[in-house]
Length: 399
Image (cartoon, rainbow, N blue to C red):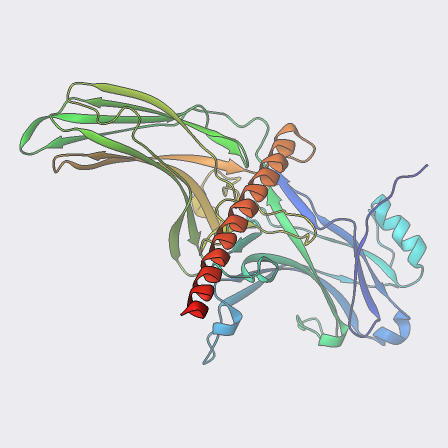
């Protein structure tokens, strides 16, 4: 018995141009990006074309502002055609995949295979949250990819007419390499005082540099107080750093936070060693303005993940384009007696696990648990508000 194969299909408004794809997610791993391979079908192609040409384009769109905010000719969107091919039903194409061959046999005359290639430095698909009350299914800021097919009268026509244009959204993601060299990041900071002797030494370290979404991040902290000040508390935050290369802007969002007074106040001459566990998860920090998420394709299941760390195949981060995402842990020690603060940053990478892996199963479990906790907390919050409203309503009636 043959297995079931899912095919993605989209039709032009005039009903004469169709695009078929075997999948909508394309992965970059170990420096290799999967090509976009599919079939375009022109119904009654001789009458439909009538001497015109059919072009397939791979388009990347970078939007850094909402469409409703575009006024006075200002545009917050930039589009770039990164690959373009012309197809002709009268010509036979070579190098077809098995899926393309089967589709062409079923569709018959007018079906043409095509292949579009991603460039080596193509950015990953990213969504940017614009506000807390935004509908997740209508997010429009970030980096998006589309496969566009249109009928053109000339070679320099990159748009075509709306009625004969097909636009099918796809997603480009990146997985961490299996043979990536794991190292243990360590950061050290110290602070002296003008009107006091001694200093406070802070050291933070991680077991490894690369973590998967949904995985615990254990943070090891060591504090050596050689001064006369006291350490009042410890704050740990995971920050997501986003750089928008098209507009030369950057900002940061907090995706996980922990504050502890365990072992505090730390007196003069004492030392403290602790291990704190943080877990950055998109379901916990939903609604944060400017938060970057991995682009999702499905509306029936929760695919929301924090945007994966941008990793350059050349080893030079200056070659990255689009939305560059990175992560770091900030450790801050609050000192008493006008001592101020002592802080240090520890960079690490957060990546997407490969499908059908143990890490992916753990991620799905963490998502489900986080959604249930958020739903329960919101339910209790609204129940509490309802009870306050009812009491105030009855009180006003009695008066």
